[in-house]
Length: 121
Length: 108
Image (cartoon, rainbow over all chains, first blue to last red; front, side, top):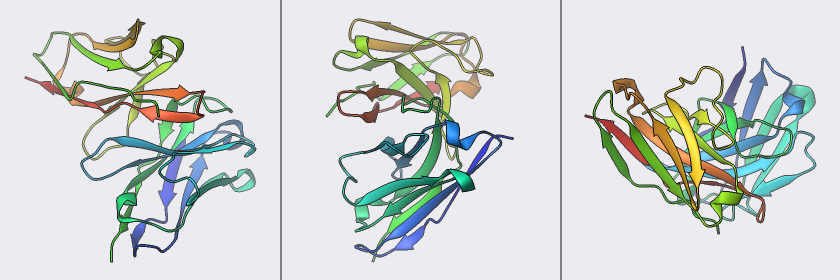
């Protein structure tokens, strides 16, 4: 079945790095843009980044630009989020989500279960 | 940056209609998407491109737009509709996706 599974979350100290992965299955991964969306505890949804289906276009929220990098390996059906210089305010559940198109349109019809990232000393 | 404003909460009796608004500058020129999120679960897309429903979403869910406001309408509300609802747009001027502030729907 169509599925996204995130991994790589955990507890990390401020200023350190973490890489999240999102394994896709059940659909043609290379046909869709992919997003990362996060949700801080008790807060609303915050869009983080998106990458086009072929990886040629990447866009970031202002809050993470210059610190986070989104990438994908279509041969491995996997999406990544490299997070550097982590801050306490990056603490959140991170979801990967499939866009409904190859170029970003915003609407995400498939979501993973999320992985928790806690930034704390 | 682009901002989408939603009411923090909406209360509705079972069987009645709930309307959730989403306001944003020049929203009339954007496609609006809506998500339902229940506690401890990932969001679920319930409306895309302002008024289209994904397969599996009940016809009770509908979307519309008028002026600078988009609206998600839930007809014949059921207890299982109790959740947080978020609107979203793709802002092509900044190449950013933006989520609304979220609305908690309580079924009385």
